[in-house]
Image (cartoon, rainbow, N blue to C red; front, side, top):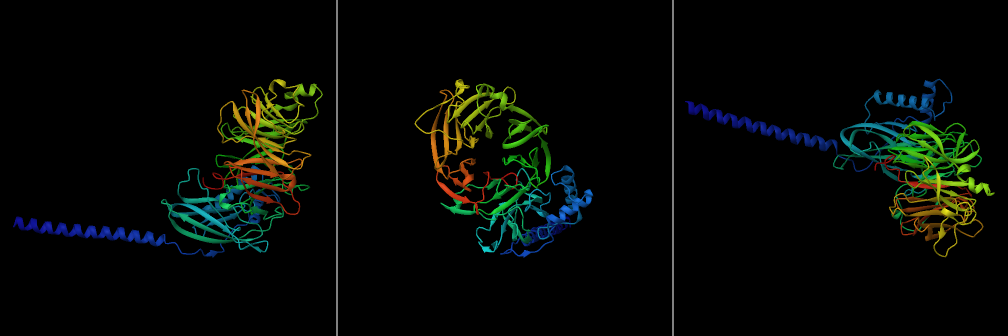
Length: 539
C-alpha cells in the first residue's frame, strides 16, 4: 500500500510540475506577445494636430500670474512663473507619445523651440525629424528636413520620462514633426507625428540663405551656424540666429529689446548655454530654454565685443568698457559675479606715454586658464596677455606694423619667412582642441587686409623660445574691409567675410565645402558654428 501511495504521489507531482511549467511558458509567451504588440511600429508616420500651447498663450499665462501686461522675459520672476505653470501642466493628466504636452517657446528664449513631455512604459530615448513641404512658397523638401536626438539627461541613458526641446521648426510654415522612440537596445518601438504651425517672426527676415555646396553635404561638419548681428542695424530687437548646413533657419534666440547686446559668441557649459542678453547682463540658459542665472557686469561697466568661456575654471571673459575705459571683464559662472581684470589704458601705458594713438580691441580668447590672446585692430597686432587674474602682463606681440615695437621691444616677435603680415585683422584665435608643445602654438587670424583686393585667413606657428612666428597656411577670401572672423568646429574652419555678406566652411585639409551668402546686401557681424550636443541635442 505504501509503495502504491508513493507511486500515486509521484505521478501527481509530475502532473502539477508539468502544469506549472506549461503555465509559465504560456505566461512568458503571453508577455512577449503583449510587448511585441505594444512595440509594433507602423510603416508610416500619421500626422495628428495635437493640442499645443502657443508661445503667445504661454506669455499671457505668465503675464496674468505676474499681474502685469508686458513682463520682461529675461527676469527671474518670469522664468520662475513659467516653470511653475509648466509643472502644473505636467501634473494635470497623463501624457503619452500620441498625446504629449507641447509648448512653443516655453520660457520666451527660443522662438521656435517646441517643448515636449510624455511618459512611456519602457525606458526609451527619443529622436525626431522636422519637415516642411515648402519654405516661403518654394518647394524644397530635402532642405526642409532636420533630424536630431532629443537631449533629456546628461548621461544619455534611456528614461521612461521624456522631456526636452525640439529644435529646428521654421517660422511661418506648417512643420511636420516626426518623433521616434527607441528602447534600451536602440530598437525603434514607436513613432508619432504632429502638425505644428509656427507664426511668422518679424525679426527673422531670411528663412533661407543662398548656398553653394562645393562638395557633398555629408562632408560638412555637424552643427548649426550661430549668426550674430544679421540685419541688426537700426533695430532694437537683436537676436542670435541658427542656420543648418542647407542654409535653413533652425532657431532664434531673442535678446532684450533695446538692450544693445554685443554681438559676441555663445558658450556651452554642462548642458547650458551662456550668452549676452544686453550690454550689462549675461544669462545661463538650460536645455529647455529656462534661464537659471543672470550675471551682471559690475557698476559702470558694459560689454562691447567678443566673449569666451573657459569650462575648466568656469569663467568667461568679455571685452568691456568701465567708466569710459576699454578693458576685459571676467564673469564667474559659479559665484555669479563679475569684475574688471584688465584695464587697457594701464596695461598699454608705455605705449600711450610715447604718444601712441587709440587702440581698438576686437577679439579675446583664453589660451589656457590664466592667459589670453587679443586682437588689436589699429596697430594690426595680435597680443598675448599672461596672468590676467592677478597681475596682467604683455607676453607676446605679433604685429603687421612696428607701432608697438618701441614700447614692447622685449616681447615683440619677429617674422620667420617671407610673407606680408596681417593688416587691421578683426579676430585672432587658437584652436583649443589642438595639443602642441608648451613653447609653440598656432594662431588663426582673419586678416582683413584693409585697402587690398582680398582678405585672408592666416595660420601662424608661434615659437616662444625663438620669439618668432611663421605663416603655415593662407587662404584667399572675399574682401571684407573692416569686420569678419574665423572659428573652428571640430577641426573644420568657418570663415565669415562680414562686409561681403558671406561665410564659408573648409574641411581640415583646407578644401572649401560650402559658401553661404545673405540676400539683399544684408550683412552679419560674426558667425560661429556649434554642434549644440549636450545642450539641445544628445551627445
